[in-house]
Every structure is written in structure tokens, then in C-alpha cells.
Length: 192
Image 1: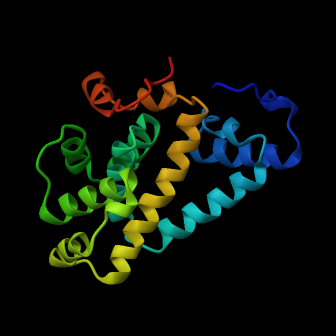
Image 2: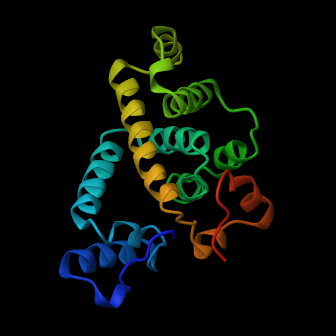
């Protein structure tokens, strides 16, 4: 990380709570957690926003949209984490591997990924035609809004991590075979 942060054993109650929450979710303290040590209020707001967005849409679509944005932003951390979630939580290893290898996807996933990537790169370039393409593969206007929320939230989180020089966890890297790890490295390398 590019900035110096307090040791995890010398944090105040709010930061300690954030760390405990992250350890419980991951089984270890992920590298991104200390990035929020100076602003536990932002960590809490991020957590609430992310859970709200994810909880309001179908989980698999959330992961596909998040991966579209994360890859476009060059966020190895978010790409790896959400690849793991697509594989492990959604039970969709074939799609996870296809995304990592830039292989063909079904029409809906392809449109969601492309739209989320375009939104993450330059939201002002999104046009009514982009929305129509999503509608043409079965997304409702509510679904479209959810994809926008997921991609926009990922832009915030990925930008914070990369802006502070946070590397994806070595523990996360170990959940993928070497070839897949290489495919998921779309920006900063994994921590060693």
C-alpha cells in the first residue's frame, strides 16, 4: 500500500469492527481492509451500499456485471474476488473461466459485461442504443438500473484500492490454478 496505516492491533473500535467483519467473511484480514482504516465511516457506508446493490438483484448477474466493470478498470483484486464469488457462491465455474479467458459467453452475459465495461470506462458514452441492447436480451429497466448500480459501485471500490496501491491477497491467488491466476491479473499483480 502506498500510505502508512496503523497496525491492525492498534485500531479504534470502529476500525476493529470493520476488520473483524472482513476476517469473518474471508477467513483472514484481506489487504483491502486497511485501506479504509482512516475512514471507518466510509468502510461502513461502502459495505451497506454494496450489500444493498447485491441484495436487490440476482447474484449471478451482479457478479457478471461486477466482473465487466472490474476488468475494464484493470482491477486484479476485484476481478479475482468476483471470479471466486461467481465460481464458489453462484456455482458457475464455466462462465467464470470463459470470462477470464475472453471466450464466448451467452448473449445476455455478453451484453451485461460489455455494458458494465463501457459504463466503467466512460459513463457519458452510454447511449439509448446500449440500453436497447440490454432490453433485447431480456433485461427490464429495473435490471438495467441494477447493472448500472453494480458497475458504478465497483468503479468506486476498485479506484480506492488501486489509488492506494492495494494488491490482491496471496490467499485469494491461491484459490486459482496458475494459468487462471495469470488470466485474472488485469492490473496490479497479486501480493506474494
